[in-house]
Length: 98
Image 1 (tube, rainbow, N blue to C red):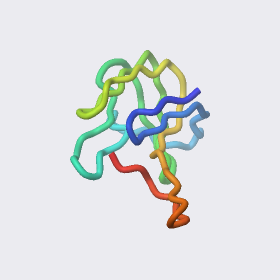
Image 2 (image 1 turned 60 degrees about the vertical axis):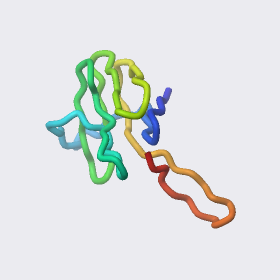
Image 3 (image 1 turned 60 degrees about the horizontal axis):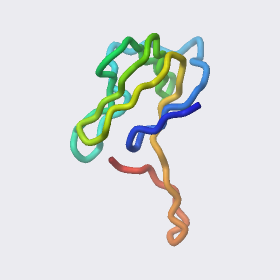
């Protein structure tokens, strides 16, 4: 199962045992506006290993952002990543910008 919230993709996965627990609930910062995709309702914890962010949703977690409708993520463990797009004219893959 996966969820998409703007340019953020939230997909099922196991959290590595050696991932470091973070002390915030911001899944991703917006590059252009400074807005944040973050848990606004519910209990969840974020972890990081290398460049990869993980979410442990302990309860239903409502993810909010100033420019998107809220979504609810079911309890579980997830990998957080940025949505990418392919430009066939430039033969390039790039991150979607919110």
